[in-house]
Length: 224
Image (tube, rainbow, N blue to C red; front, side, top):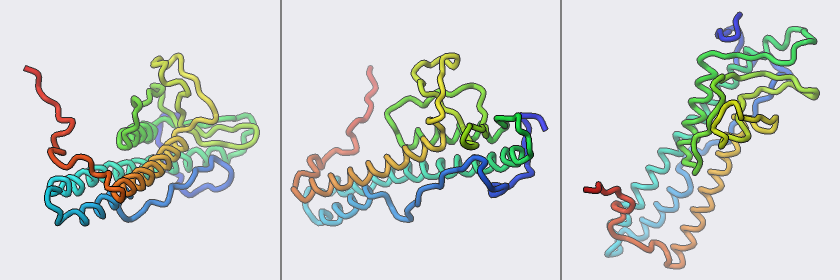
């Protein structure tokens, strides 16, 4: 089979062993993110308070837009994880065959492109304040043998600001799926921290500060 062909003989669960451990997905919650829940709690307390009508509507609608993108981030993370499991099965089937001289197996097909498409969509959904990371134009997921173990890797440059693929550098410590899992964990920690802060400010009667014309904040105006 050529390196760019799609081998369909493996399943995401076989073969087992030491060929490229894939970290598990986090435990996704069934309910809304904490920021949505705390705003629902606040707006219910303010529903009958004169002058807060617009704020209550805002507190209902905007957190749901936030939830929409959190859901999108979870979907993209699950998609990357499933693709990596599928690619691992195909690569591990090759690595299981005895060959002491081989140190790496690679696959380049539509699935490897989908890993990176989903990863960039994941970063967009969490709205991190960075450009989408440039990646090598040769998008390939590899199962590489190191002195201590095999590792499944979708590479990411350690110096993306170079903006030149010939100048990219790579490290064993940096890998796409592990990076995505860490970003998601940090996003959820931020969600909880913001919710605690908002609730604390509300109980101190310091939130909301503004309750009118909220839907017009940040609106772009056309320059004549």
